Image 1 (cartoon, rainbow, N blue to C red):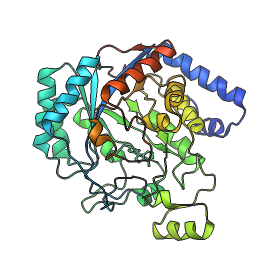
Image 2: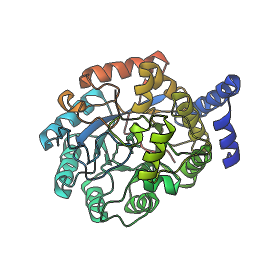
Image 3: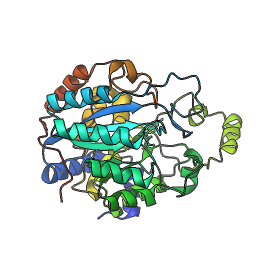
Length: 357
Ligand code: SAH
């Protein structure tokens, strides 16, 4: 197991040959542990209504100029059918933190998906009541995704302001609860959040191992101009004002938000969590399209999450700008993803793609 210092040294490494070796060794290990299959998780972006004001997110509550949507049960079931027809093993139901999504609405969706199709159901609905998490597990949900975003507590508190009913200072206690309830648990971080130190990121990666996560998704931070973090311009005077207004700490050694950094993070994550499910994320594909996603898969990742959200809603779930596949249909997104995995000799995973033990 790499130490935190070794992880940090790798994050700082600039020699392209050494980086290439790191990525190759992660890719080799991926082949030995989870094999050549790429598991496709069909992503359904259920709702863009949000009660939170995360400083990074393009659909934060303060954006009153946005058209918001919430899909119907029938629409979600239609997406699940598409996933099943394409041969996927999992659907991921993701949403903003929407109080208009009731416990029973999600329970019914889970039950119907389970009755009709042999699909694993992953939920990513933000911070919800423990009682809801329990009911959804009972209804048949298999997995829950909740990124801890950063292990730097001061930075987390700044970028993820509390809701009135927030009890815990960060997401670690919540991840423990999800595990206790019986979910396979996924988490992850953003790479290059303004204020994120290289040492913070090294600690994040060490935590992936300590938390024994089943899934780990990481992507570069992408500045959305309509958010506080996206309004940092590089002008020292203006930026100082924004930092002070939002209590945003300054980093001594700022992480760059790039795909090169993301590929290193994917590789290091594979090395510390050999059997975990690791996606080549949409954020990676947003920076560099097809090449980005394929390079992620060649750096240790074994999962992709093709977007199945109906085209009419996609542009409304703009958590960051130019999100990959915003103007495509599910079929186009699927075909592109198939071409991508075939171009590197990988195959579509069969079964539900649960975490190996
Ligand atoms: N409401 C849910 C789902 C959030 S969207 C929740 O809070 O858990 C899923 C992930 O997208 C977030 O956890 C965050 O890591 C990532 N994300 C959001 N805004 C982003 C941005 N501007 N750049 C990069 N990633 C972002």
